[in-house]
Every structure is written in C-alpha cells, then in structure tokens.
Length: 232
Image (tube, rainbow, N blue to C red; front, top):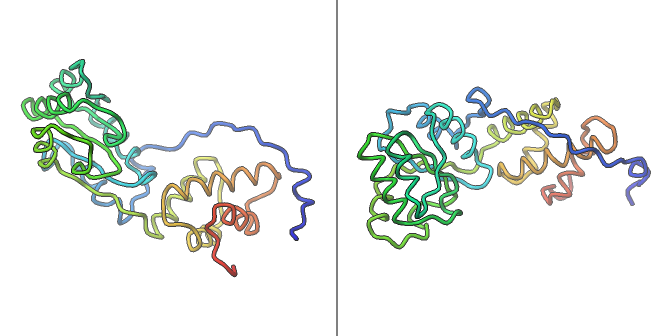
C-alpha cells in the first residue's frame, strides 16, 4: 500500500487565478493547427468571406478566434430574432463561437452571412462538428454553409502536445523538466483537453504538498486521469 504520510501534511491550496497567454506569439503551432493558423494569418485574404474552424474541445479554436478577433477588431455575435447580428455583420467583421452548441435562429444566421457577403466583411465561426451536422432546417442557410471554408483542427501530435504542456505550465509561472514533459506525452490521452486536466492536477498536487514537480507526482496525476500505461 502506498505510504500515506505525505498526504497528512497536504493543505488545500488557494485557487489563485492564472492568466493564460493568448497572443499570436504564444500559440503553439504544430501539424494539426498549421492550416488553421495559416488561414488566420492570411486574413483578410480569405478564400471565402465565411470561415468555420472545426475541432474537438481544447483544440485551440478559441485561442485562434481570439487572435483573429483582436486582429480584425471583430464583434462577437449571437444570431437571434433581434436582427442585431446582421447589422453588426454589415458594419464589420464578426465572430460566432460554438455555433453547434449555442441555439441560434436559422433566418438570423442566414441574414448575417448575406450581410457579410454583400458588404465585403468576414465571419468566423467555431464549432466541434462540421456545418453539415448542425441542427439547421432552413434550406437557404444550409446552402450558404456549404459554401463556407471549413478548416478542421485534428487531434494534436506529440510535438504539439509537448509545446502545449510547456505553455500551460508557463502560464502558471512554472517550469518543468523536458524529460518529465516527454514522460507525460508518452503516457497521456492525445487531446488538448487532457493536457489541460493533467497540468491542473499536477499544479494542484505540487501546491498542496509544497513540493516540486517530480516523476512520482506526475505518475499520480496520470493514474488519477486514467492515462497511465499498465506496468509503468
């Protein structure tokens, strides 16, 4: 049985806020993100006025959307029956995040896209699924969405995961040994969401016990996340 003496002196750490670095220079760019980053960097020379970034939770969609929003001075919108979103789209670039998870009015989004096309503006949308899978009943809107440029962000490779883990620790003003980063990457589920959960857990354990980040502590975090490889 594991020695529980280390737990006796654990203290619940204060959940101090840490601000993630969200600038373009802070973006970890790897293979799965490359096409999306190139598209954001190319604005306003986009292949179409409407772009949809598609990717799983924690894949970097919000980071990229935030970069574009600042660069384009875009206004966040929610297409609803008020018609305000279409007015905003006629006046400048607009951003609609989590389009497949937030209820929107079909006709309102149709008018937003028309306003963007008619006035030479840009619309960036983010989602976890392709537009063809969205709960859309208006045929004209389906047609407009089919004409959008869709860029898919895949699951991260090992190089990108390592970069992300280092960045997540840096956001907390923490450094981690490269060999421990490699150890985590080789044993974790391949997802940005899991990287975030593991860093949160490792940081919590380190603070609670007042210790530096060690391999046993990392092993404990991996085991708690169900990511440890049997026999390791």
